[in-house]
Length: 289
Image (spheres, rainbow, N blue to C red):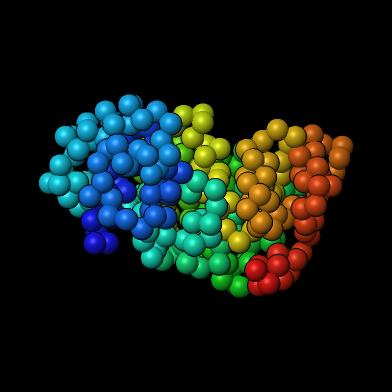
């Protein structure tokens, strides 16, 4: 029954018009999804564009018969929202991904996680602060999750690997892609020593709207999020906002208001995020969580 449900969730994921919320509603009802007609699925999932979904559902079942699904499953590691390996912290968030594709050690999702995000072009003092902080966090066995982006994300991943500590990279593309391209080698090393995650199918390339969606996964799997450096408008602030909405801690390195690079960070502190300048500030909060 479990494999049957997992297959149904994958097929629904491949179908237009239903989305993660609809799949979440279906799973919550604890019914035999395979026994439902397309019309019944659309009603119970609360699908708005029912005709589009019903047509797409028929197409999915034609394109992906059981043997095709078995072939896909043999060539792609993935978990669904009903699997034990799926992180409970992410499951509790709004519209969590119904399917997560992965390469590497999926068990890392069950360990205490800290998201680390920041500028793609960080100032030298932000880099120095991160280099000072992370080794103490490694001692306390916190797994660092980030987005494989240039700048702070890449540095956080690199420091983990340099210290032989596993790290988690969440991507905004399919797992056979890499953005930015210069992180291809870093991605491969994380696959070998940590975990790479994506909600996107193979061959899906980078799109602008993918990255805010990726940020919700980074914030969702973590106990807390560390903002290393953020301008007034940045992807890091999106991640911080999502973390706050999910009741997670947000930690922020302070910076000078004379520099635009820190204005978003300072606003987060003003709004109630925790200002941190010692690793222990983070460790205490994560242990309490």
